[in-house]
Image (cartoon, rainbow, N blue to C red; front, side, top):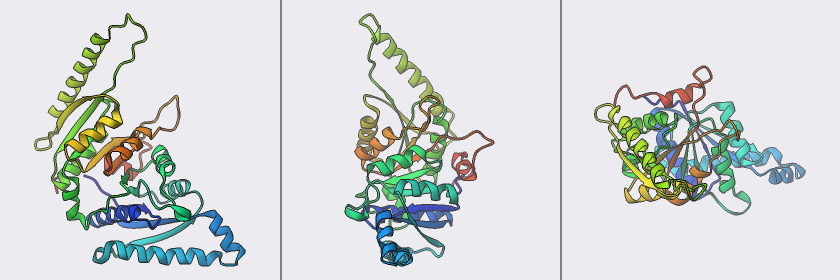
Amino acid sequence: MISITSVLCPIDFSDGSRGALRYANAVAAHFGARLMLLAVNDPVLVEAANLAAGGPQLAADTGREMQRFYKQAVGSKALASVEFEVASGKPAAEILRISRARNPGLIVMASHGSSGFRKLFFGSVTERVLRETVVPTLVTSGADPGPVDADDIKKIVRRIVVPIDLTPATSQQLSVGRTIAQMVGVPVLLVHVIEPLRPLSSHHDVHAVETERRYRAETELERLTAESAEGTTPEALIAYGEPAEEIAKVASDRDAGLIIMGLHSSPLLGPRMGSVTYRVLCLAHRPVLALPPQPDAGERTQSEHTLAQEPQTSR
């Protein structure tokens, strides 16, 4: 069962972050969770306000603007438990810092936000958060207006696409996908993308290797679907090509409203690369739930643990 006690939603007062805020509000309402809104002021503006002896006033003004923005975005669906936090600095760094300090169960943020001096969620910010987050992060499209309430999420999601690369992280992605699918009553589609081979020499038997790769993928997908509990058996699909492009195409063709992807770390490269997930965001134009790697059992935080659990009951 998924259990979330708090949701962090960074905003920059753009239409994109308004949509993300509605998702965050609906999720918090469903779980009875605390909603935390974060706005990050540009350090240049803060310095200018300090020089004009209005430093504290800038933070206060931003806090009041956040409250107005929240009420306008959600209307009668406003929650009783909402926190408004104002920070100053580089957006990605502040989002990650607040996340580490407050340990939310979920981050909800828009992929792109406003332009001009209030600009917050441009590509590099979203990608950096995806590279370093230790909290599951739902990233919404800048053009997505968001749900009216929790009941509206089912109409938006319709089907969940779970791209898997058959690594150990696959079990976590599938578990979360099945749990959310049960909660909102939609089907799950597993997608494995086989990338084209680039042979090292003309003597390399590409056809034999391709056949073996497909056989292994089919065998593993059959195992995963066979192990699914009754009533949660997902559909499986194998595609060929560039992963992000194929994932976006499948999501569009099958009318999926949510993509659940894993974020992988590398012992050689260090911090994980969020490029594939971010490219899917750019191409698919629909919400993507990015799951960071699971730590060892002794290091797992409560928020990560609850998202990784198998469903015990259906809602």
